[in-house]
Amino acid sequence: MRAGHSKRVTPPGPLVIIGGHEHKRRDREILERFARLCGGRGAAVAVLGVASERPRAVEEAYRPALEDLGLRVAFLELADRPAAQDEAAARRVEEADGLFFTGGDQLRITSLLGGTRVDAAVRARWQAGAPLAGTSAGASALSSTMIVGGDGDATPARNTIEMAPGLGLLPNSVIDQHFAQRGRIGRLLSALAQNPAVLGIGVDEDTAFIVGADGVCEVAGSRTVTVLDGTQVSATNASELGGDEALAVTDMRLHVLPAGWRFDLHRRRPLPPERAGRS
Amino acid sequence: MRAGHSKRVTPPGPLVIIGGHEHKRRDREILERFARLCGGRGAAVAVLGVASERPRAVEEAYRPALEDLGLRVAFLELADRPAAQDEAAARRVEEADGLFFTGGDQLRITSLLGGTRVDAAVRARWQAGAPLAGTSAGASALSSTMIVGGDGDATPARNTIEMAPGLGLLPNSVIDQHFAQRGRIGRLLSALAQNPAVLGIGVDEDTAFIVGADGVCEVAGSRTVTVLDGTQVSATNASELGGDEALAVTDMRLHVLPAGWRFDLHRRRPLPPERAGRS
Image 1 (spheres, helix red, strand yellow):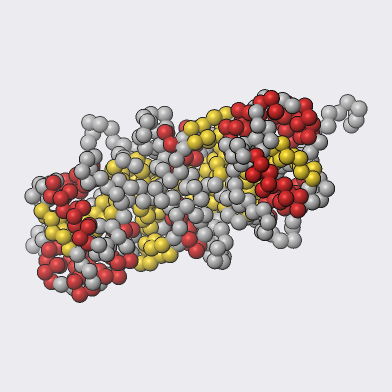
Image 2 (tube, chains in turn purple, green; image 1 turned 120 degrees about the horizontal axis):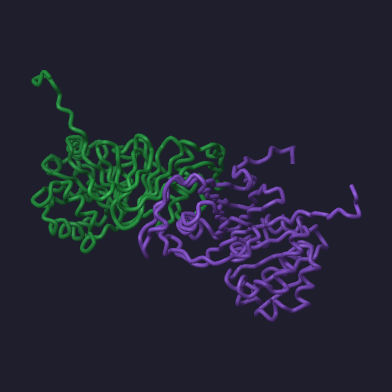
């Protein structure tokens, strides 16, 4: 209780992992949840458009949607690494109540932002409790190792995926997005067969997986989150595959979770929705 | 040992469940396997084109491919139920060493064939040990309950699938085809959530799941078979869903099996390829 010496430990903020194409006008439940997590009307949000080569279009999509929810929006284009080293940009992040990574290309996020001042500011704000959202490429980038390419609609094979180091804000995870809409279970299975210890999180469009500080996640939005748990995998040929040989993987555990369902990352167990009246 | 009174019990023939688009000229491993199961060069095959509204094109695809493998081909168009009641057609089936259902629409197979003389002849030949192959719609029709419609690339939901009674040659199963290529895991998950006791078998294109009389199946061809086993499913909302609400299903077990891998239907366990030298 020696208050003067105690180091105040704030849990990091929630991660709002969005599968892309979240609704921006009607039925915009996901953006509403994000706005509430930021503190509601009057809160300041830094929108990081680094993933996109067309930041103007991205700003035009997000500024009115977020302002309509009462948020004050700072849009950061971050077109190259010097821009991500800019002190004024880092300050906009430090002053924000919440952070939002837009879609585009996840390799732009990591390659343009990784190790810069803005990156450090993002991590510091999130560590201090600010909610951090990422949609589409912005969701993938939160993984420890992220999928950067690979066929959807293809049989699992080692050559169907390319991977790269992600921001790692959700450790021990591979996150994929536009999941059912782009038929991506094959590439997520390929990633997990290469290391079954990692948790696979496939987020559908207009759907979010909201990670709380206690490691309990909740699904929000109109579709589902698919969780792949490889801890019981009994066999795989992932280390023996040539270029386009087909993958074998047995005893993968799969959960499909719609809105209200939760997942405990520590125990790796799905949880049904909390009953009305308890929330 | 009273031979005069013993009823000779022949196990039914192998089922060759093909996911569609099996190669017909080069790398035609699946058709070669089927030809060998029929007895090889000189064997007679009845090709049932009932699934297709364009039987001429189907015959033009299969007759040269099968004849090139040394098979004698009887093509049965079976355009309506009277054709499927035709005694001469039933005799062609009775005289065949192997049977092959082509692709098209699985509802044409069951609605035009179900309960007819040709249907009875098919079952009798198969029960007497003749191999029976089905590709695409012809594969689905072998299920006990078959999927007849439903979005691929869609989030699992009850309204993503329509089902109908299949021929039931592989009991307690739902078979889907063009599986990875058309992103169909969502609709197979929806089917299984409605009854987790049923085994889900998703067969990729140019891939076959060959069911032996002992209940041990082997994968052949260039891609994979996905087996979904719902016996450990811990929760689902399948009975509570409205029209387009999203499905919940937890603890589904999933196996992805490429060529050479096997699956024991009785024990519901995947088996790795047999080592060279033992076969």
